[in-house]
Length: 382
Image (cartoon, rainbow, N blue to C red; front, side, top):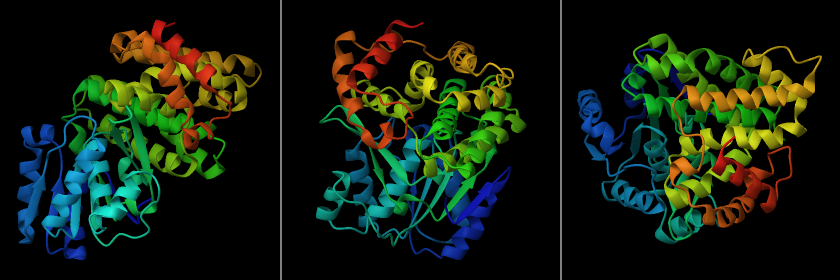
């Protein structure tokens, strides 16, 4: 977790104290085209003008970022000699911001080795502040960043403590303008972090405490955030869902849902939250069989009933809830809806089966054949 976290309504105002404390010479503001068009970037620039520090803006981010976007941002930060990177936006902008802050002080050969996954940065001289405008990715509190690798039709993660920001500022007021589809997808993304980290083979009593609270809050607040976006209580609680689930995943990890989502993002550019949401019930129909005790807990967190005397029924209750969630939130429920080609399922299963760093966290040994069966079920639907 970052050393400094500011969370709650009005938390964005604390950015002034943080800038004064960090005393940068040049600020690089990293955001995306959507927030620029919505006027959010202009508002932030107005706030930053109070500090009489030069600010250079990079907003060449749209959709799911690729490693080429990260390289462009690294060059931008380096050329302008930025010593504080402020990232504001959804997970894409935040991943680009924190990774560029960690890598802009490295030489080209080192950056290439890091982006290839051959090593990880061990230090960072450029400061970083992250400000999310969605509630879901948890990027502001995690040490990983995800980018598209079009040469191999996959998405890959890079991981290092250096990708943790110096400061995370989580203000639910900034999420009010988030549209329903993005609110739904990012919200279920956060829930996926919570449920996968709760059953992870690396879970601890501490990480499960965070994940449990996230799941309880999610069940009560996701509909408010999606269908009544101006409900500040719902938005604030979903900000807590994202934060708590992010802390849990940062320490316990996520599993097969994420591993299977990466080929969807890499080949079809499916937004990460939508890919996770769609795959979640299909994966847990299989993996829930080996973590029945945890499924009993989760059913309780979601108010599905008390299954302590009938534990074998808990996995079915949880997966039924996950399927109904897709329908309730107007999210796609089959790979067909995403225009995925059935002929690609085999190669997608092969790609997902190689993501060992995630699959090892799943309490069910999934080989390529098992993953392919899940993809086929998700292709056709229930």
